[in-house]
Length: 277
Image 1 (cartoon, rainbow, N blue to C red):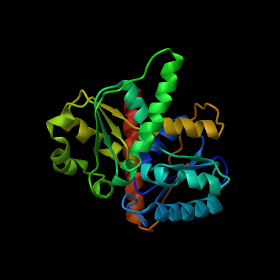
Image 2 (image 1 turned 90 degrees about the vertical axis):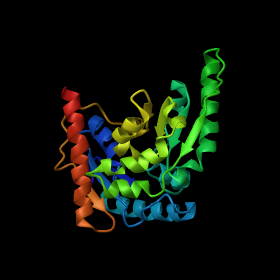
Image 3 (image 1 turned 120 degrees about the horizontal axis):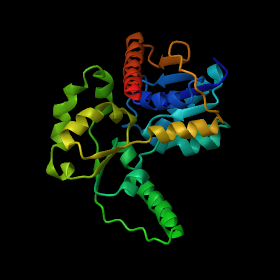
Image 4 (image 1 turned 60 degrees about the vertical axis):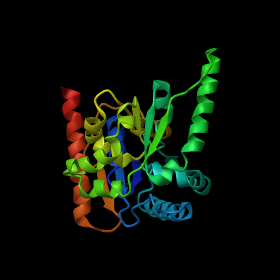
């Protein structure tokens, strides 16, 4: 599996949503999905520890598969390590950040829902996005101002619980209600899913927050960036799920590996259904 290969790294199943977006526009590519259950969770680790973990994963992946690009399909891993990683390795990397810019353009009060580690970088990301928007608005002879409120939210251990309960995510509804059932959140206009795991619980969040809230995540943007950096061409081929996907669980647990495949088949099939409806 050395030709036209893309590697995707996450601490569990969250990055499968990014994989799903990637296969839509890169159906002829082979994907190696690395679920790092051995080092999970990432959210409670230091920047130094995450950097060491990332280096180990990259070196193993590159030695075995020589991918054209490596995707950090994890917000926590991206914000803590990707700048250093890009300086260390002469490889192509794509990271994922909270889709804050899109949410700000949409406007209104927002919820940034992420891990504690990712939320530490919110202020820096917010300043970067505001700077970009001010520049873009100025070119259009407009003034960018925002008085919208932002609520930062994290739920301890939630990514691990999503991995554990992938086939019965409704069991997390009461826990989510305890956090998001407050009026202050129900009045918000949008929610930014700043952890790829949280895409799995989008239906549960929508039921709690109401149908009027808009969701933003970076999965489609990541797929487009991967397409760009590997210099791919548009293809009408169908993704070969059996031959073009290899799933690795770093703890060697075969049952977890099977769970990842089953979950991916679930979201892959659901998308195919809706695409054809």
